[in-house]
Length: 553
Image (tube, helix red, strand yellow):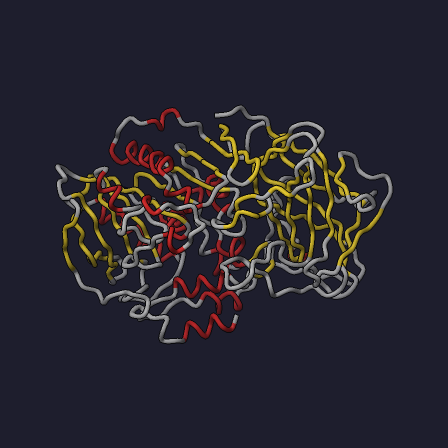
């Protein structure tokens, strides 16, 4: 952790070192695109935003507008095929005008759009301080949308596009309802910074989150010190609540894209956003691939075009034929069948309990008649408890999964529980899945819980999705058995007869990729003594799984 704070102080983490040039308006034309750099856009706060504007040189009339709102630097083209060779992005899918996680101006101007890439307030060479997902940032974003919708070259219809931060920020500004915002396309963006990124199940995330502070925190002005605020605000208080959008206020048409593969970053937040927004015209797509590759691949670009052409140009497109929900039911990495649904969670889901039996290390449809326990050393990277269920008929699990555990620790006053679901084929071979945008060897699903944070939000929790308040700590005493409910993040997976679902529970990260690979890590543990899982009468630990039956698309 200290190394990240030190990097923030070094002169190398400056706009100059990171390739940004001082603000200076310039206008150029290339390949049929008029490019205006560092256009000033006024805000209600008295400072200006700086944007790059791309327009087709041969535009015959007013243009619909796509906006990409980024802290990563509008000056910095980002060829993902080079930056992340295993991202699935092919070099020909991006022009050299494409910045990180944003729409490609070369493609969209050729379709008759204006494209705006905007530096978020306070980043790079700035005229104000920087804050992230704050109310002020969202209001400045609103001002940009309204500016874009009222220029003489604009047709008054503005859309938002982009991945990750460029998606998460869409929730915040859409909740403010700028009149010229016509459509949003949140493509894998979290919606609750604290509960989805800062702490996983109450366990602090200690690698990706401080890394993001460095990636975003480049400016010649003051920058919100997210890592310091994380230490000062260990609970879900007003500070963190201010970064959560008012989903009920979002009524703009939305094409929301999530994945089963981005657990620990975007999966949960994107699905929660879709579920909670009030938009009458909304579509959800959930894939099992790599987020960047899926955003830029040609079929996805075609669907984005159909969506924006309808709402920003008023054209009839294939959108009329889309199901409300389409999702991938995966067989393994790179192999899936796309299926339609009408709702999320999927209509008609049959939630079934699989009971843990410590004596047989199994998951069974009926509760074990006798009690038993299994334990492990939570500080040993190789130690864990696992439970298997073999399917006797084909079965598809799609949706939220919940784990109820009766647990205790032999020493200390708390436990960190790391949970994963794995698939094994009928011959006993582990089946891998795409994970975290670049990896191809992940589990099918993850869950986490710091047991002292087990208090549930009674208004938001359901049987299939326990939601933590993250506002209290309920410590344990050695040997005390407590009931803990763990949210396992949504997934969509098919099992054939004879294949096995394995539940893994341990005190350390399930995946532990070597540093310096960018990945989520949880190195600030509270574990001390041996963990014990209790099963049987009165202590019926169980896994609730969502069984669905859907036709192919």
